[in-house]
Image (cartoon, rainbow, N blue to C red; front, top):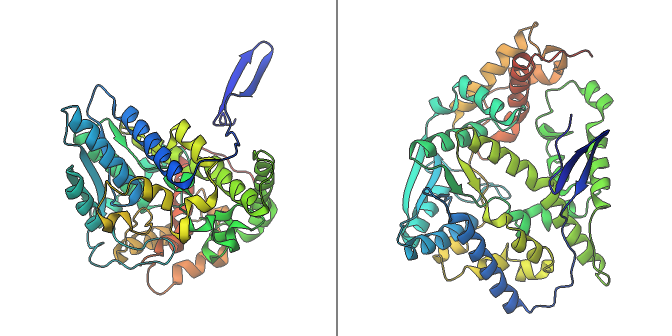
Length: 423
């Protein structure tokens, strides 16, 4: 069994079926000036937001205080207010003690969301609600199982999955069945650091995979560190990813006359849009719909994506400023602190208590020789994780926890889905 690839249709006729592509990213020469490009992006984004706020029920917005969600919220609030149905309701998620004990990370999380979300909301005029989650909310095993079932597959993201699922549950309790999301803005506007860091963007695999391989916990793929090393070699996780990378490169549309740098920049953007973005969209869509909430991502608008895809990378990052094209397009909508805020990824708890919860559950699993996942675990890695002094915490603790989180989810998946493994 396999999923139908985005941009394709499944045609079923006797005696069989076939997949047919109905859309692909077009490669065109970009001739607009920078000023014209900024104006066009603003117009396309405004149109996309307007189309996504049309509904027969209230539409809210996810607001983290970053440039993406803040821009959408500002445009949506203007539309709703003009139509007499404002103010816009905005929502964010936070963890107890997160803002006070926040530890920045140079590439993942620069600042906590809460102060910026509040500032953006005040400036925009939205009515903002923060959903605050404590450790008890994150350590409920039943919600971890619900997160697995909503995605229909195990995941190494642990508290990020649980918090997102609880967010949509609370959103539905507030009476919202549709919400705007800033998903794919980074893919469209080259917001990820690996899109312009030569060490990753020029690697011979997916740029994000290159970054993951820089961490021991992610060797062979995020979340695989507890899987038997010999089994990983036999399954060739690294080769599997690299072959998909080579296959993806054959699809990339190019423009005659592109320099080598422009050609590579287009390839990285294409990979991000077609291989990285779908995993995030699929996760968010499944989790939102698990509670009957429709995720609406204006940055995925076809006209906007097709236009920005063909904008040269230099215009998307003028003077080295991250997503400068988008910032220029929405500069009049937001306060300077939000407009110039560096990217900060979706929050993950920094509480030691959550790390204790994960390690304790994993230790119990590792001690159970009858566990469904027992044959898959690496003896050495498991023993080291169980015996480690202290629990993963801090800005990058989620990467250290990923292997344990995946093992726990994989065991539940094998058991609940009645999967028969024969190694």
